[in-house]
Length: 68
Image (spheres, rainbow, N blue to C red):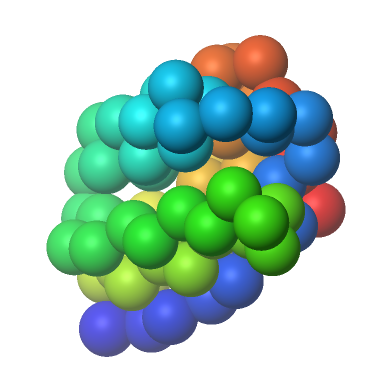
């Protein structure tokens, strides 16, 4: 398992946190996603044989947020 932290810009409320969490957990291979509204970041634990950081960022962006 690999753990990465992604900067997520554009979150303003708990609804945003739920949207980003749902988007990340919807990616195959994601085991855990902790989204921090105050820190504007997401810490994701995933199986790197099933997904990668680029796919995680893409999922966040498809949910309507900016990911770095």
